[in-house]
Amino acid sequence: MFSNLRTLFFAAGTLLAVLGLAPAAHAQTDLLGELEKQTADSTRREVVTATFKGTHIINAQSVETPGAGTLAFLIQHRFGTLNSGAYEFFGLDQAVLRLSFEYGLTDRLAVGVGRTNIEKTFDGFVKYKALQQTTGAHAMPVSVTLLASSAITTLKFTQAANVPERSTASRVDYAYQVLIARKFSPGLSVQLMPTLVHRNYVPLAGMQNDVYAIGAGLRQKLTKRVALTADYFYLLPGYVADNFHNALGLGFDIETGGHVFQLHFTNAKGMSEKFFVPQTTGNFFDGDIYFGFTVARNFTVKSQLK
Image: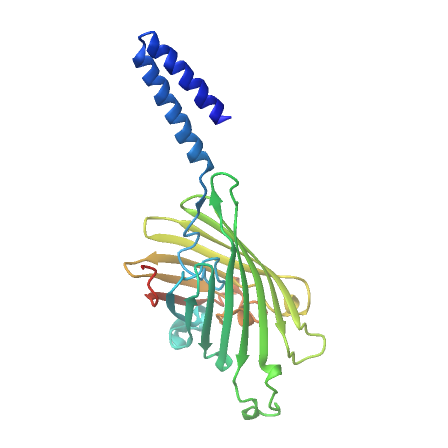
């Protein structure tokens, strides 16, 4: 079609030049150039970046990965509950800590390892960005990241009364998530998270080995450097939903020169899927709220410059 338009404009321009109307011919050429530019702009696809500013929202992981050759070091910290009273300094006398490393093998594929002092647990994950949100022709409306993680407790159960030592297999839990996110505007991003947690061992008959949940998260920018964040996990009906609470988190992302500093309030004590999805005991609205923070620092291990 555009080759025919070019021929038509060329013929019209030639005729106008013969008739001594060269300025008009020049105008026609400019019009054709503008048409081609608009066509090129309309067919260009651009990847939407920075749906979230970090690889974690609050409890949940986000669709983001560190990027090829980038090593991220995360310090995640939770104090005790705010309703623990003045004797415990409203939770500040207590602490739960998780340290982790996340590395981008490519811009889409990342791996990570972490350790938390809850049940002396080590965890690891693989994260793959299967789809990326784009704009332009044939735009992709969402980003989709696949996450598979596992966790193993190294607690010595023989130290507890009447609790036998457990096998290695019985110490392992797994989690699988599909993270689906859309950046609706420069200020607003939303994420959905269908989740499955499989537990090799449950202490009581009737408890679920497989726990299903639906998570949701958001980020709303408030200022140039501050954003409101939230995430929530709804447990599907079953034993876990009847005896535990849905994990809820509210917080703020604060961007500084070299990293993102995250402050949050949540009823979940644990900081990996094994804990906050099926084992949240606190009731957010009864004051069982843990104040915490996450500090992430990125290091370029492998430069992309050649």
